Image (cartoon, rainbow, N blue to C red):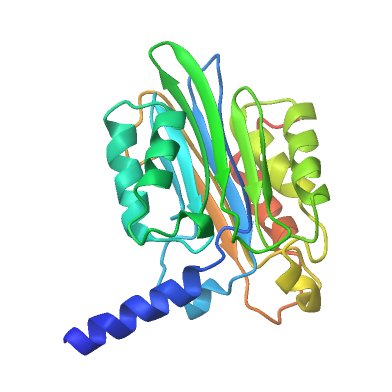
Length: 245
């Protein structure tokens, strides 16, 4: 049993090294909604994960955080504890940097937003050893981050789409993913002629219970399918959300 657990932990670590490749966390300053969206060129059919959006966690009425790049579930658990305790996005991310469970914060990437003590907070961190192109963009109520990208243009296009799209938070998050709808946005997916292999969007309203957001949608495709899965995901999204312009 011990050997099995060690092997499972190794596989989990291997599969999660670069997720999510591009993602966004954001909050709606008027409605109090919090949301997360992301995508990556990892074939989740070949992993033990059952939920495509496991790297983004929403805390209704409080905030959201994405933990990615050499993902470590223990770091995410600590982030959850800090966010549930009401700490600000900056405080949570700074704590994670200083208290990485493997002392390897230089491999991690975080994006977080929060409502804390009547203050809106957005922050991000990109470790020096995350895989290029890597970087992040922080706005008043959002953070966009990515690694293993074709270039900065992916993040800039996501930000532009998010800011220029009308509609509710889910519409803006879906638009941000469409901003990254570029072949090879995640460099590993260039041979697949797609931006990525899976994507997710989820949004929690203030009255939601932690772990059960009002909206949770995702789509995954196989490596080698050579379909643009963000477009496929858009079709699913459009059937559920009829309010987007």
